Length: 428
Image (cartoon, rainbow, N blue to C red):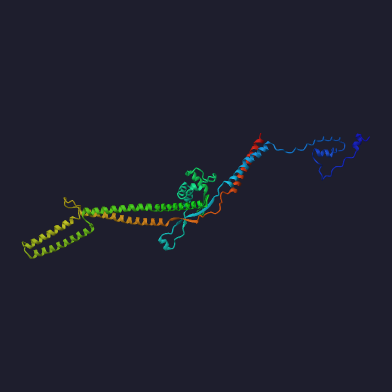
């Protein structure tokens, strides 16, 4: 019979696929291929049951969370950007800029000896510390106060129609200083020590006036720094000069008091005169002794001339003794005048003090002159390389840059918050 098991076993096997083509995998492919061929002598394999086919997914429809994301994007991104665009293009006042650039220079021409020697450097050198000081001073409240004396900053920076970019109602110095840093931008090139200032205002005249006031105050500050530097350079030299002068005055006063007390102008000249007198007396004594000897040889002992000669010799000797007594500490006890040797010692000490004081005064005076010359040669000045001019085109506020920056910041914030929300929602 055709449907017997023997006939089924004797039936030829189904042709197999070529080896270079792999049979399709999966239950669907197995159903399409039919029951797998069993090896000879094995019972036939059962066919796998057919798999049900799922229906296609329905069309996506917006849900509540989608409307929430759209509304949040409108509130957080689109609405703020629209409001900012309306304000920037309808309410914000145009701002004009005036640019000022300068550097602090120090003129150091060298001394006269260096100029004659040909080793001087006539170019002005840059003063690093002064430039740093001026950079900080321009941004300080002191500069704001100084500029307010030249320009009415409250009137220049107050606009009722633009409360965002104008000064506002708070006109205290702290608020003015904060607003000053917004409208006056200072750029400092530390490699070349150049300062560039951009002054913004609502009219070109106000911007130009504020820039000129800043340059004027900067010039005054540099002159003050130069005066302080000169004062520092000459302070110690002047103090030494004053001390040397006082010492010289004291030594001269002591010498004058000594001369007045002893009624001697120059003890050295006086002693030279007294020594000359003593030498003369000694010569007279020698002549008198010679005459006395001659008289004794040629006359009798009771000759009146011999008595007169003896008396003359005695008077000369007494006079010599008195003159010699002036040069020693031995003298009349009742005499209030000091011994002449002590007077000479005191005079020499006073003379030495006066000479030393004079030399010290000359040296300190020369040092003071050198210090003054150095202070004058190291003068500082403001070298302006960009003069402030009246602006013709308003460059600020940069409306499109502000809008793009605001849009990017709000969009980034909204995206991050959305991702955080979905991350927390998926963790539930």
